[in-house]
Figure 1 (cartoon, rainbow, N blue to C red):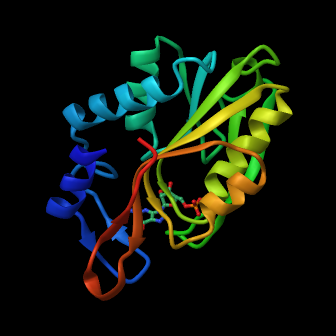
Figure 2 (cartoon, rainbow, N blue to C red):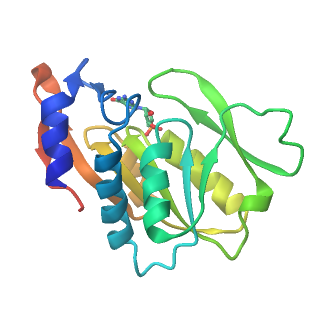
Length: 193
Ligand code: 5GP
């Protein structure tokens, strides 16, 4: 997605050989116009997949997931990182190791929001080692629902996430694929859409 790649070059900052900061349009401040375009591209890519729900994980996945759900006219569910006292009914959970926080946390979705009739598109902001996607897939499968694919805004292709997901037979659609962040330089490889 050319618009996204241009934005990464303009506003992304390389913090190290493995970490990209995109807090001015994706992970902290959100560019709604860009998210809307991202939503359209994911919708187009999965228009024939029979998607009934979009699933993401709080917090930075919510913006692209919401615009995708809006375009596809389906609900968006975000997995919660901390259980709160209002989550009283059946809960589906998985452990997720966070690349940026370097801690493991349990993420949960109320079981009433997913059923075996659902076909789910997972949407997330950044793909590193695939731990967040792995946890979400586990939750969706616990519900008996089907995962149609994983839509990623920015994939760090030099890490293992995509390889892991494809080995599991999961379709991955990344709108920008970073080949390298070495020496402060952002290089791209061909994206999926
Ligand atoms: P994974 O679960 O694929 O290992 O890591 C993905 C999650 O970690 C993303 O949802 C994102 O929140 C965070 N993350 C991983 N790498 C980066 C990065 O380079 N920059 C930022 N801002 N977040 C990252």
